[in-house]
Image (cartoon, rainbow, N blue to C red; front, top):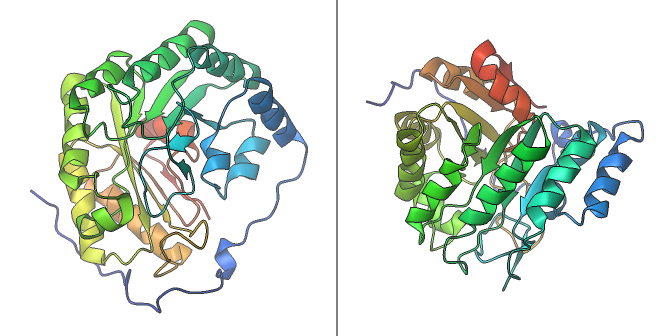
Amino acid sequence: MKPPVQAELPIIEAPASPRRLPRWLKRNVPKGNANHLTARTVEDYSLVTVCEEARCPNQMECWAAKTATFMILGDICTRPCGFCAVKRGKPLPPDPEEPQRVAQASERLGLKHVVLTSVTRDDLEDGGAEHYRQCVEAIREQVDASVEVLTPDFVEQRWALDRVVEAAPEVFNHNAETVPRLYRKVRGPKSDYQWTLDLLRRVRELKPELKTKSGLMLGLGETEEEVFDVLADLLDAGVTLLTVGQYLKPGDKYLDVVRYLPPEEFDEIGRRAKAMGFQSVASGPFVRSSYHARAMAEGVESGDNISCR
């Protein structure tokens, strides 16, 4: 049963396609040289990060804190999502040495919570699931750290999900991204909203102790009712950790921003999400799937909200 919606947030009622970034979306460059260690580590171990490939606005902040989200299985995606800056095309075969390099880089950076994501690999029979498993196991062998995976949907390799879950990462993340009405426009013709929910539900069925996580990006034309319907669906699927952030257009050929939500609205969405039953919530204009991921995972116990302005 979906929780009642008690307040109204004007999520969609604003001018379309704003040309200038509002003041709250301008960030200061962090001081210090710690980000150079992260950059050097990524380069030394020939790794790819979603921080760079997806043009994340938090890259400098996270790298200065000596953390990064590793993007395994190459830097070329087989899906033409309308929001994502990652390259599309025909990818190379998985690199068998990548799991060990990810583990070594995690050790050098002193990571206590390692986040792995990947491009979508519809060209592989298992969608890259075995490679995920190998990466999780390599990290466990070399680093005393928890592991979070942010996977594609494995929509044509449904059995492959089990292989990732067998590796027992502490957090399993798969993003809903947007509301059902906009799914095909935003995520492309192969993506399916119901399968996203079924995937998250199956993870909890296979390993109930595993923390499940999902996220939404706002500003694509969704309505308030649609947003909270999705949150209710995610709760029903067993999701306990939630991220909500602002969509930022990465280039001319991508989907337009319909609206920039002010920080106060993200704060209210976060409060309401917590009241609905999510155990840990990060909601703010700059929030991304792996932003402050360790704090989010640990927030399940503390119950803290995490805001990113």
